[in-house]
Image (cartoon, rainbow, N blue to C red; front, side, top):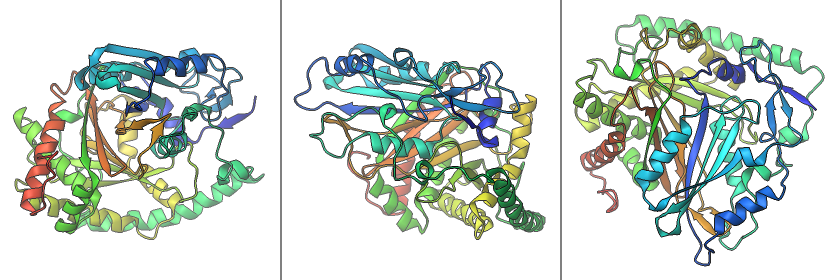
Length: 467
């Protein structure tokens, strides 16, 4: 068996794995069936898989030493004959199942850990939704794959042609032959070359850190530094049970708000999240007087990178939860994100990853020492925005309705929010600890009300379906 060594970033997700902090990400994909779909549409898919299929990397990779997650060195090895019946399962809701019942089922599925004695992922084919609809829920450990790579593989595994009826599932697709990663073997001096790249990047990091320290000394600075986040109920200890809520909006509506407000799509997402959390925490009588701080992952891969592993930087920004009016809140968010972006300008991707690791070191040390959720947090919530396919996609004639991402709550971070663009829509996934954050599903409702409020304040028409 060939072996591939995990990067330090990948191994960090293994080291953080525990009963309560399960480091897998996932996604919920609801589908509308084609008009000619037979009643046993999903059964035929399952029977096809059981008849024998070949899995390709990363879906056939498992840990060489699955019982030693905190080993200083880890390798992926290719599993010769993965147990497909374990990895791919068929589930059903009492027909006709509604969105709430689907959310309850997926919340429970996301509350169980992956088995590292197998490739660390699972897919559940869920039938029984009203109107003959079905859903595919997949979870995968973050040490195996990141959100960027998952979206690339999703786009490859579905078709833009509704008449295509032989499309294989994502885990049976061979690697893209056009990718540089598939074509180019590792150079013999890979280790020394990597060291050289990191040393060069370290010079950029030292310069940025020096400038950051100078900026933080200015009492009127806009940049967010380490340990500037307030204490909050979002940042306590968590249990293993999860709750999941979703919301979908028109992408052009969000872009119209961004244009009217003079900001970006990400600025609007952050401002609306700030409004949502402001109301949610106010009703719990737990809103801090200082603004909540968000950590925003930043993809640093080149455009032709096929993905795999983790290559993500980060920045910190204010959610302006201390600001009452929606436009003023958006302005405060834009001021914060512009300062964070200026900090990263001109840096190489290696330098951005290094700087992010350095800036997030306090959070990492809290996770490894078991003090997360007991000490002051470095940030209050993680908010990710993942670009997805722009065209409608189909699986054997069934139209993909939405892509709802599911991320990772951990000690000290009881809530995680991820949005994913797809075919003219923006899909939000709210995942959190069921015990720490009661009534988490209200976040989806309050987000909708925040969208209406900001739209009217900016004089942007609200689509009828969102009003």
